[in-house]
Image (cartoon, rainbow, N blue to C red):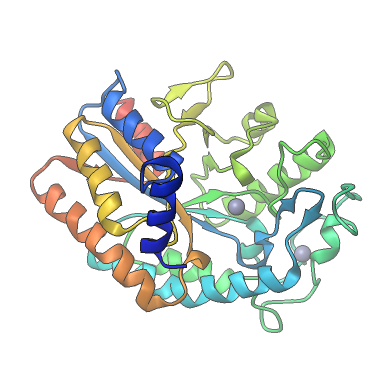
Length: 314
Ligand SMILES: [Zn+2]
Ligand SMILES: [Zn+2]
Protein backbone atom coordinates (compact mmCIF):
# COMPACT_ATOMS: atom_id res chain seq x y z
CA UNK A 1 0.00 0.00 0.00
CA UNK A 2 1.34 3.45 -0.83
CA UNK A 3 2.13 5.96 1.88
CA UNK A 4 -0.67 8.18 0.57
CA UNK A 5 -3.26 5.41 0.92
CA UNK A 6 -2.00 4.51 4.37
CA UNK A 7 -2.43 8.12 5.39
CA UNK A 8 -5.98 8.23 4.06
CA UNK A 9 -6.90 5.05 5.99
CA UNK A 10 -5.28 6.43 9.12
CA UNK A 11 -7.17 9.67 8.74
CA UNK A 12 -10.49 7.85 8.35
CA UNK A 13 -9.76 5.66 11.37
CA UNK A 14 -8.27 8.16 13.78
CA UNK A 15 -8.84 11.65 12.41
CA UNK A 16 -5.14 12.18 11.67
CA UNK A 17 -2.99 11.03 8.75
CA UNK A 18 -0.10 10.51 11.17
CA UNK A 19 0.84 7.52 13.32
CA UNK A 20 0.34 7.64 17.07
CA UNK A 21 4.12 7.59 17.57
CA UNK A 22 4.52 10.56 15.25
CA UNK A 23 1.89 12.59 17.10
CA UNK A 24 3.38 11.68 20.46
CA UNK A 25 6.85 12.72 19.31
CA UNK A 26 5.57 15.98 17.89
CA UNK A 27 3.87 16.66 21.22
CA UNK A 28 7.08 15.86 23.08
CA UNK A 29 9.17 18.19 20.90
CA UNK A 30 6.56 20.93 21.20
CA UNK A 31 5.79 20.67 24.90
CA UNK A 32 8.92 19.39 26.63
CA UNK A 33 9.74 21.74 29.48
CA UNK A 34 13.43 20.96 29.18
CA UNK A 35 15.63 22.42 26.46
CA UNK A 36 19.32 22.27 25.56
CA UNK A 37 21.91 24.96 24.73
CA UNK A 38 21.18 24.31 21.07
CA UNK A 39 19.23 21.73 19.11
CA UNK A 40 20.88 18.40 18.31
CA UNK A 41 20.26 15.77 15.66
CA UNK A 42 21.20 12.11 15.80
CA UNK A 43 20.40 9.31 13.38
CA UNK A 44 20.90 5.75 14.59
CA UNK A 45 21.01 2.87 12.13
CA UNK A 46 20.48 -0.63 13.52
CA UNK A 47 22.84 -2.93 11.62
CA UNK A 48 21.70 -6.52 12.04
CA UNK A 49 21.91 -8.36 8.70
CA UNK A 50 20.13 -11.72 9.14
CA UNK A 51 20.34 -11.53 12.94
CA UNK A 52 17.39 -9.18 12.63
CA UNK A 53 15.02 -11.96 13.70
CA UNK A 54 12.82 -11.46 16.71
CA UNK A 55 9.96 -13.01 18.64
CA UNK A 56 6.53 -12.67 17.02
CA UNK A 57 3.99 -13.55 19.70
CA UNK A 58 4.49 -17.27 20.24
CA UNK A 59 6.66 -17.59 17.14
CA UNK A 60 9.69 -16.05 15.51
CA UNK A 61 10.67 -14.23 12.30
CA UNK A 62 11.24 -16.73 9.49
CA UNK A 63 14.74 -17.25 8.10
CA UNK A 64 13.44 -16.23 4.69
CA UNK A 65 12.35 -12.84 6.02
CA UNK A 66 15.63 -12.34 7.88
CA UNK A 67 17.72 -13.18 4.80
CA UNK A 68 15.75 -10.85 2.59
CA UNK A 69 16.25 -8.04 5.13
CA UNK A 70 19.95 -8.84 5.28
CA UNK A 71 20.30 -8.52 1.50
CA UNK A 72 18.52 -5.18 1.49
CA UNK A 73 20.69 -3.82 4.31
CA UNK A 74 23.86 -4.80 2.45
CA UNK A 75 22.62 -3.17 -0.74
CA UNK A 76 21.72 0.13 0.90
CA UNK A 77 24.69 0.65 3.26
CA UNK A 78 27.15 2.08 0.66
CA UNK A 79 24.55 4.70 -0.28
CA UNK A 80 24.10 5.72 3.35
CA UNK A 81 27.88 6.10 3.74
CA UNK A 82 28.10 8.19 0.56
CA UNK A 83 25.27 10.48 1.63
CA UNK A 84 26.68 10.90 5.12
CA UNK A 85 29.99 12.00 3.57
CA UNK A 86 28.28 14.35 1.16
CA UNK A 87 26.43 16.05 4.02
CA UNK A 88 29.12 15.53 6.69
CA UNK A 89 26.67 13.71 8.89
CA UNK A 90 27.96 11.29 11.55
CA UNK A 91 25.75 8.26 12.20
CA UNK A 92 25.38 6.08 15.29
CA UNK A 93 25.55 2.46 14.14
CA UNK A 94 23.86 0.05 16.55
CA UNK A 95 25.71 -3.08 15.53
CA UNK A 96 24.88 -6.71 16.25
CA UNK A 97 28.33 -7.84 17.33
CA UNK A 98 28.23 -11.14 15.41
CA UNK A 99 27.88 -8.98 12.27
CA UNK A 100 31.25 -7.42 13.09
CA UNK A 101 32.97 -10.82 12.79
CA UNK A 102 34.52 -12.57 9.80
CA UNK A 103 34.26 -16.02 11.43
CA UNK A 104 33.37 -17.62 14.75
CA UNK A 105 36.91 -18.21 16.00
CA UNK A 106 36.90 -15.20 18.29
CA UNK A 107 33.62 -15.66 20.14
CA UNK A 108 32.82 -17.89 23.08
CA UNK A 109 30.55 -20.90 22.94
CA UNK A 110 26.99 -20.05 23.95
CA UNK A 111 25.13 -21.71 26.80
CA UNK A 112 21.87 -23.43 25.75
CA UNK A 113 19.03 -20.94 25.25
CA UNK A 114 15.72 -22.33 24.12
CA UNK A 115 12.81 -19.94 24.64
CA UNK A 116 9.41 -21.67 24.45
CA UNK A 117 8.45 -19.49 21.44
CA UNK A 118 11.50 -20.56 19.39
CA UNK A 119 11.48 -23.96 17.67
CA UNK A 120 15.10 -24.68 18.51
CA UNK A 121 18.00 -23.24 20.44
CA UNK A 122 18.37 -19.52 19.64
CA UNK A 123 22.06 -19.92 18.84
CA UNK A 124 21.47 -22.76 16.35
CA UNK A 125 21.10 -19.97 13.79
CA UNK A 126 24.85 -19.37 13.93
CA UNK A 127 26.20 -20.99 10.72
CA UNK A 128 29.72 -21.46 12.21
CA UNK A 129 31.05 -20.49 8.83
CA UNK A 130 32.87 -17.38 7.64
CA UNK A 131 32.47 -14.14 5.73
CA UNK A 132 33.70 -15.58 2.47
CA UNK A 133 30.97 -18.23 2.47
CA UNK A 134 28.24 -16.32 4.24
CA UNK A 135 27.55 -12.58 4.06
CA UNK A 136 24.33 -12.67 6.08
CA UNK A 137 25.67 -13.59 9.53
CA UNK A 138 29.13 -12.05 9.12
CA UNK A 139 29.82 -8.47 8.02
CA UNK A 140 33.35 -7.53 9.09
CA UNK A 141 33.71 -5.96 5.62
CA UNK A 142 30.84 -3.55 6.41
CA UNK A 143 32.45 -2.47 9.66
CA UNK A 144 35.66 -1.78 7.73
CA UNK A 145 33.72 0.42 5.30
CA UNK A 146 32.18 2.34 8.19
CA UNK A 147 35.57 2.76 9.88
CA UNK A 148 37.20 3.86 6.62
CA UNK A 149 34.68 6.65 6.06
CA UNK A 150 36.02 10.19 6.33
CA UNK A 151 33.17 10.79 8.82
CA UNK A 152 33.66 9.77 12.42
CA UNK A 153 30.68 7.44 12.90
CA UNK A 154 29.98 5.85 16.27
CA UNK A 155 29.96 2.07 16.65
CA UNK A 156 27.48 1.15 19.39
CA UNK A 157 26.36 -2.28 20.60
CA UNK A 158 22.97 -3.75 19.73
CA UNK A 159 23.83 -7.01 21.52
CA UNK A 160 25.66 -10.09 20.29
CA UNK A 161 22.85 -11.84 18.37
CA UNK A 162 19.75 -9.64 18.91
CA UNK A 163 18.37 -11.48 21.95
CA UNK A 164 15.64 -9.37 23.54
CA UNK A 165 17.10 -8.90 27.02
CA UNK A 166 13.72 -7.92 28.43
CA UNK A 167 11.94 -11.06 27.17
CA UNK A 168 10.47 -13.21 29.95
CA UNK A 169 12.60 -16.15 28.75
CA UNK A 170 15.92 -14.30 28.85
CA UNK A 171 17.93 -15.34 31.90
CA UNK A 172 20.74 -13.40 33.52
CA UNK A 173 23.26 -15.89 32.13
CA UNK A 174 22.02 -15.24 28.58
CA UNK A 175 22.02 -11.47 29.14
CA UNK A 176 25.57 -11.63 30.46
CA UNK A 177 26.67 -13.59 27.40
CA UNK A 178 24.96 -11.21 24.95
CA UNK A 179 26.25 -8.01 26.57
CA UNK A 180 29.71 -9.42 27.36
CA UNK A 181 30.41 -10.93 23.94
CA UNK A 182 29.21 -7.78 22.21
CA UNK A 183 31.50 -5.69 24.36
CA UNK A 184 34.53 -7.89 23.72
CA UNK A 185 34.02 -7.92 19.94
CA UNK A 186 33.05 -4.29 19.41
CA UNK A 187 35.67 -2.75 21.70
CA UNK A 188 38.30 -4.09 19.30
CA UNK A 189 36.70 -1.89 16.64
CA UNK A 190 35.81 1.07 18.84
CA UNK A 191 38.02 1.48 21.88
CA UNK A 192 35.64 4.18 23.16
CA UNK A 193 32.64 1.83 23.00
CA UNK A 194 30.06 3.30 25.37
CA UNK A 195 26.54 3.10 23.91
CA UNK A 196 24.12 0.16 24.08
CA UNK A 197 20.88 -0.07 22.09
CA UNK A 198 18.60 -2.75 23.51
CA UNK A 199 16.90 -5.02 20.95
CA UNK A 200 13.22 -3.94 20.85
CA UNK A 201 14.28 -1.09 23.16
CA UNK A 202 13.57 -3.48 26.00
CA UNK A 203 15.69 -2.14 28.84
CA UNK A 204 16.88 -4.90 31.21
CA UNK A 205 20.00 -5.95 33.17
CA UNK A 206 21.35 -2.40 33.21
CA UNK A 207 23.75 -3.38 36.02
CA UNK A 208 25.44 -5.73 33.53
CA UNK A 209 25.84 -2.89 31.03
CA UNK A 210 27.64 -0.97 33.73
CA UNK A 211 29.82 -3.97 34.58
CA UNK A 212 30.97 -4.19 30.95
CA UNK A 213 31.78 -0.49 30.77
CA UNK A 214 28.80 0.89 28.87
CA UNK A 215 27.79 4.39 29.95
CA UNK A 216 24.76 5.22 27.77
CA UNK A 217 21.65 3.35 26.62
CA UNK A 218 18.51 4.28 24.75
CA UNK A 219 15.23 4.03 26.66
CA UNK A 220 11.72 3.27 25.42
CA UNK A 221 10.23 6.67 26.21
CA UNK A 222 10.96 10.28 25.35
CA UNK A 223 12.56 12.38 28.04
CA UNK A 224 15.60 14.59 28.44
CA UNK A 225 19.04 12.96 28.60
CA UNK A 226 19.55 12.06 32.24
CA UNK A 227 21.43 9.71 34.55
CA UNK A 228 19.75 6.62 35.99
CA UNK A 229 20.24 5.40 39.57
CA UNK A 230 23.42 3.50 38.54
CA UNK A 231 24.97 6.58 36.96
CA UNK A 232 24.43 5.57 33.31
CA UNK A 233 22.97 8.04 30.83
CA UNK A 234 19.51 7.40 29.48
CA UNK A 235 19.14 8.62 25.92
CA UNK A 236 15.57 9.34 24.76
CA UNK A 237 13.92 6.94 22.33
CA UNK A 238 13.17 9.50 19.63
CA UNK A 239 11.20 8.20 16.66
CA UNK A 240 11.49 5.06 14.55
CA UNK A 241 11.30 6.21 10.94
CA UNK A 242 10.44 4.36 7.74
CA UNK A 243 9.30 5.32 4.25
CA UNK A 244 6.26 3.08 4.94
CA UNK A 245 5.14 5.36 7.75
CA UNK A 246 6.37 8.86 6.92
CA UNK A 247 7.23 11.19 4.08
CA UNK A 248 10.49 13.06 4.39
CA UNK A 249 8.45 16.27 4.70
CA UNK A 250 6.72 14.84 7.79
CA UNK A 251 10.16 14.44 9.32
CA UNK A 252 11.46 17.83 8.20
CA UNK A 253 8.44 19.29 10.01
CA UNK A 254 9.50 17.53 13.23
CA UNK A 255 13.08 18.72 12.82
CA UNK A 256 11.87 22.32 12.52
CA UNK A 257 9.70 21.88 15.62
CA UNK A 258 12.66 20.54 17.55
CA UNK A 259 15.05 23.22 16.31
CA UNK A 260 12.67 26.02 17.28
CA UNK A 261 12.59 24.67 20.85
CA UNK A 262 16.25 23.60 21.20
CA UNK A 263 15.39 19.93 21.46
CA UNK A 264 17.28 16.76 20.63
CA UNK A 265 15.80 15.26 17.47
CA UNK A 266 16.56 11.55 17.49
CA UNK A 267 15.58 9.28 14.59
CA UNK A 268 16.40 5.60 14.18
CA UNK A 269 15.75 2.99 11.53
CA UNK A 270 16.97 -0.14 9.77
CA UNK A 271 18.42 -0.16 6.27
CA UNK A 272 16.14 -3.04 5.27
CA UNK A 273 13.18 -0.69 5.42
CA UNK A 274 14.32 0.64 2.03
CA UNK A 275 13.72 -1.38 -1.13
CA UNK A 276 16.67 0.07 -2.98
CA UNK A 277 19.52 2.59 -2.78
CA UNK A 278 17.40 4.86 -4.95
CA UNK A 279 14.52 4.82 -2.48
CA UNK A 280 16.96 5.45 0.36
CA UNK A 281 18.41 8.49 -1.39
CA UNK A 282 15.10 10.02 -2.35
CA UNK A 283 13.87 9.59 1.22
CA UNK A 284 16.94 10.83 3.10
CA UNK A 285 18.60 13.38 0.85
CA UNK A 286 15.99 16.14 1.39
CA UNK A 287 16.24 15.53 5.16
CA UNK A 288 20.05 15.67 5.17
CA UNK A 289 20.11 18.75 2.97
CA UNK A 290 17.56 20.50 5.22
CA UNK A 291 19.74 19.75 8.23
CA UNK A 292 22.79 21.02 6.35
CA UNK A 293 21.14 24.41 5.76
CA UNK A 294 20.14 24.64 9.43
CA UNK A 295 23.65 23.75 10.46
CA UNK A 296 24.98 26.54 8.25
CA UNK A 297 22.67 28.92 10.11
CA UNK A 298 24.16 27.65 13.38
CA UNK A 299 20.84 26.47 14.81
CA UNK A 300 21.51 22.72 14.99
CA UNK A 301 24.45 20.43 15.75
CA UNK A 302 24.70 16.92 14.34
CA UNK A 303 26.51 14.34 16.47
CA UNK A 304 26.39 10.69 17.41
CA UNK A 305 24.79 9.59 20.70
CA UNK A 306 28.06 9.48 22.60
CA UNK A 307 29.03 12.98 21.48
CA UNK A 308 25.60 14.42 22.25
CA UNK A 309 25.80 13.04 25.79
CA UNK A 310 29.24 14.61 26.11
CA UNK A 311 28.07 17.94 24.70
CA UNK A 312 25.04 18.32 26.95
CA UNK A 313 27.23 17.63 29.97
CA UNK A 314 29.94 20.15 29.10
ZN1 LIG B 1 29.35 -17.45 15.47
ZN1 LIG C 1 17.19 -4.49 16.37
